[in-house]
Every structure is written in C-alpha cells, then in structure tokens.
Image 1 (cartoon, rainbow, N blue to C red):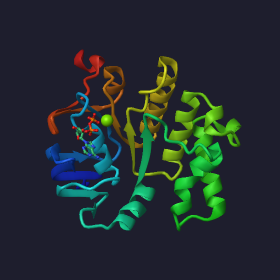
Image 2 (image 1 turned 180 degrees about the vertical axis):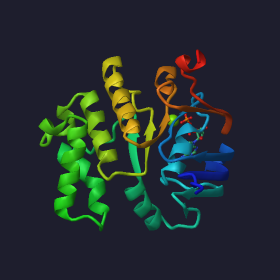
Image 3 (image 1 turned 90 degrees about the vertical axis):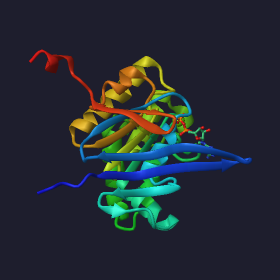
Image 4 (image 1 turned 30 degrees about the vertical axis):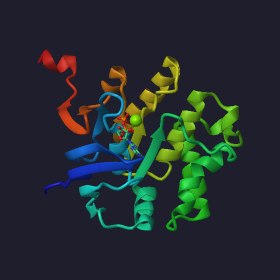
Length: 238
Ligand code: ADP
Ligand code: MG
C-alpha cells in the first residue's frame, strides 16, 4: 500500500499586494509532509514562515500552485468549505495564544468544536474535558485568560488546538512569548503529542525548539533552501 502524504504542496506561490507594493512571500514551494511527522520551519524574519503556515492551515490561499490536504484538493474550495475542513483537520497554536478574553477557559476550548455539526453537546463537553486534562488545566475551567499566566494560557490554547483530534497541529512560534521554564513545558507537551501520533508543523527561530522536531525545513526569501531530518547524536555513533 502506498500512503499519500497528509500535506502535498506543488508549485506554491504567494504574492501580496499592498500600497502598490508587490511582495513575493513564497516562491515555488514543493513540499510533502506525512502523517505523524514533526516538522520545524525556520528562517529569518520576513522570509515567509507565517505565510506558509497560514496556507497549510487553510487560513489563506495561494496565488499559484496546488495544495492537497488528507487527499482533498483544496485549491478550488470556497471560504466556507475551507473553514469546514480547517475546523476538523487543523489545530492552531500561536505565539500570542489568541484566546478570546471574554470567554472562560472551557468556552475557549469548546469554541472551534461548536462549528462542527457532527458533534453533540455532550460529545463536545467530553472532548473539552479530555483536552484540558491532557494539558493539566482541568482546575481552571471557569477562569478567564487574563487570570492565567502566559504558560497556562498557551496550555489552554494547546487544549483548544487538540480538542477536535485534528490531523495536524500548526504552531507559529509557540514559545515566542514564554519564559524558558514555560517554553520547556510547552515543548514537552508537543513532544508528547507527537509521540502519541500527532502531526506537527512548527514555525520557530529558536534552534533549541527546532531540534525537538524530527525534520527541519529552512526558508529563505520565500523558498525552501534546506530540508533534512534532525540528526540525533547517538544515531551517529552506530
Ligand atoms: P515570517 O513569518 O517568516 O517572519 P511572513 O510570512 O509573515 O514572514 O511574511 C513574509 C513576507 O510577506 C514579508 O515581507 C511580509 O511583509 C509580507 N506579508 C505577510 N503578510 C502580508 C500581508 N497580509 N500583506 C502584505 N504583505 C504581507
Ligand atoms: Mg512569522
């Protein structure tokens, strides 16, 4: 049996037009990512990392090229169809957590699930409880984001990302706003999710975070300039 890649980008280009300026943010990206991979995406500021992650997460569309996610060609989907796939298949983790300040922890984690017509209220509440237990935040269900530390907010954001059992987690600088202790906790959590089978695409400019992934992709000026497995020192000794 041949397994198709979970993510398949062919000839992807992204051009932004703003104030008469044309920015070629991504140029001819060809990229395949399989289920269960843990990939880091790094490169200098402005090289196109977040743009790439937005395309992968169906938050934005390419100017050219094709993107097939879990066997579904996404290029010709309309906004609503993209949102539907996004809600089911993709979990997001952002540098700035992006929790909604007016909603409690429980409501934040539940929010993406409320768009899923395939889930009953009871199923939703069960999934929220399980996700918060996985990030050890079950004791803060009724708190609001402002009542939590940065590390706790990011753990809630991770619970929100994993609650719907998505095919892939997209993390954009997930430790960028955290102190080293909380960064460590979040990176350990990502390791754990990966060991349990999650596919992870993580943008990071931190070499320590990148080394936790199993495959490093480097972007420069909107192009992939290197793509290789992370070499584990002990494997070299064999
Ligand atoms: P990175 O995440 O690697 O720092 P980005 O993907 O955010 O880089 O941006 C890549 C390039 O595209 C930059 O030159 C940036 O200014 C430009 N860009 C990103 N988003 C937009 C947008 N919505 N409109 C116009 N230009 C954009
Ligand atoms: Mg960015």
